[in-house]
Length: 165
Image 1 (tube, rainbow, N blue to C red):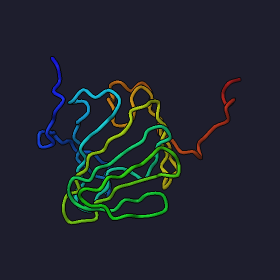
Image 2: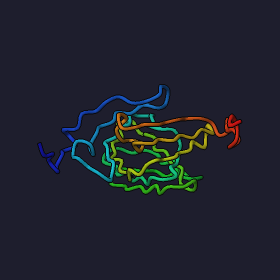
Image 3: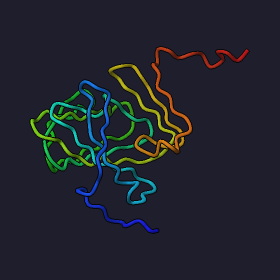
Image 4: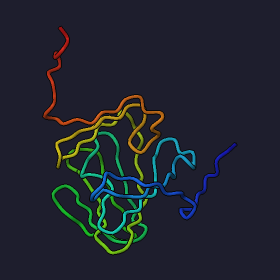
């Protein structure tokens, strides 16, 4: 059965996501519903006062965010920017562009998140000193396709030859 190349955002089913406290969102699968191959895209809905992900950057994948409704704050590098409906945000890969969107308004912040889906991807979280690696599926891709993923702290690193004797 062929997938339709069209999906209305009002028809996207949302699922809960978050790690408690300030991290909370509803996510809606878009790319998988449309059969996308090289780009990932999903609808993200942030309740007032919440953010979806820790401050981070990717070494491989580029992200773009299109603000559909609401307002918030973009933390980007060492600056903060106010964002509102109609804004487009570019987050190229690399340590110069760590980013995080937070809903600082009293209404929902809705945006479309788009990214390249190259893998493996490596990402860092500057605030906590963590890093992550996904192989088999880029972040936002199918968890069923993921063959390896790890999150750790850079401070836990071992020498290349550790355990090889």
